[in-house]
Image 1 (tube, rainbow, N blue to C red):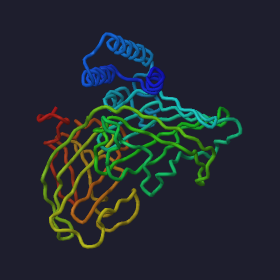
Image 2 (image 1 turned 180 degrees about the vertical axis):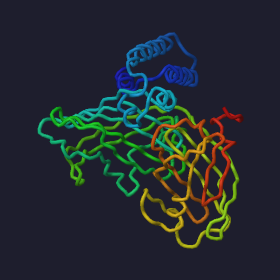
Image 3 (image 1 turned 120 degrees about the horizontal axis):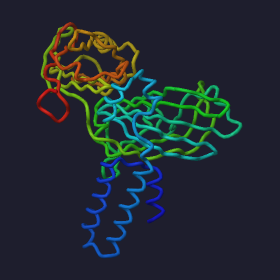
Image 4 (image 1 turned 90 degrees about the vertical axis):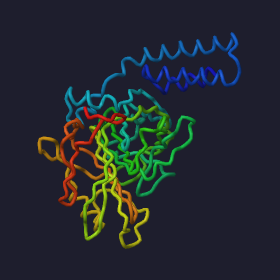
Length: 354
């Protein structure tokens, strides 16, 4: 048991809130099994002490990693905006002479981002390193992560598309820094208790493996943050009525759900696409979605995941920079020229705007 706990603690650096929750779950489980005896009380006290030590050791892993801030072009104000979405971790995984470190994770309802450093052994040339792959899960919509509930069971979150962004390479030190970004079309990422991350092969730009191994870990995630609006706004496109039923906005992500009573023609049930392909109605629709803040300034949206069937479509967009969602309370969303007020946009879990 001590070894198991040590392995968990070596991988996880809990925040004070996570530490309290972990201890609470341990105590709850203990009470469910049988009344706590003196020996078991001492065991729980020991675990609590271990959590305290780990929390202190993790104190150096606080704030947003500067490399993430540089990627977003973010300053101190933007850092404060994304802090509620950040998980400070310092997980190290070693295999095949290579070391993969998870430095930080950002999570909202539709997005998970991971900052990773990989150091290769001697003889591995990283000059053409491009990304990691988990080949057992290979498809057009690649899923490198499993989202787990509080019991450790895998959650069904639909299609999660992803992209790898190489932030830095140091060929002399054989080190490369990646940002992994996963985007859900159906949401629920924030409802996960943890994320199980897989990596098995570092690839070059031609998809060839530079080094293979097993680098995997489980990372806790924070609760939901962001702003949302439940709406029922109707607009017309191509002679058919469509409704906007959900709007979600975080400093990193913009998401909308569109529904229609009269299904579109064609066999499109269950399709999904990455940004770029021309899929008629949906590509045209995407180009005519404009998000404008309360000062009338539009923001750049990049399609990250679209999922749909003849009666429902969801779009998940990435934002070009870290933006305060409060800027859009009082702004507008325009679809096919139809303007929708965002006066109802509120902080998740509240009824009044802030």
